[in-house]
Amino acid sequence: MSLTLYRQSSLGKTLSEVLEELQKEDKISNEMLSKTLEIFDRVICEEISKSKKQKASIKAQVTSFKNCDDIWIFYGKNVSVTIEKTNMTSNKLKIIACDKNMKEQLEQGKKNYVQLYNNTEEYS
Image (cartoon, rainbow, N blue to C red; front, side, top):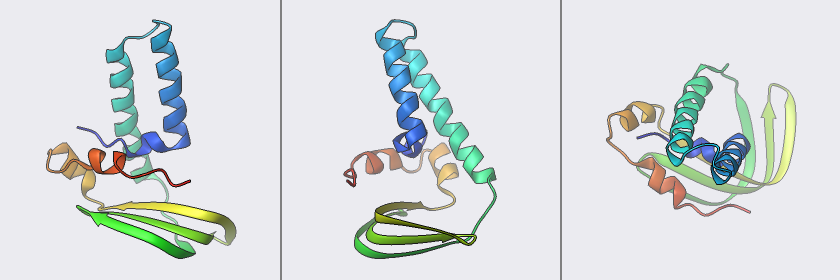
């Protein structure tokens, strides 16, 4: 089982669209599509964990939040984010925060976070 959380990112959505297009054109099989997305899930988790750690300051009005099995989902508005003296603002924000040991738990088959994430509504 793999974590499909990052399939909702711009990169993940684009990859999925391209793979589906290739499948419709009979250039790849359904098996190849699934396997490619599984590899993407594993590699993106590994690479993000290797990335440089930076402190961020986030200020926002929290409009709602939920917690289920160590996954927190926060929705906010009027957002200000500061990362190493770089300021960014946005009208809205969705933060998904997971337990740092989730990858090991997923590999051991202890929790199914995929279903939880897929059941969260899009924040638009």
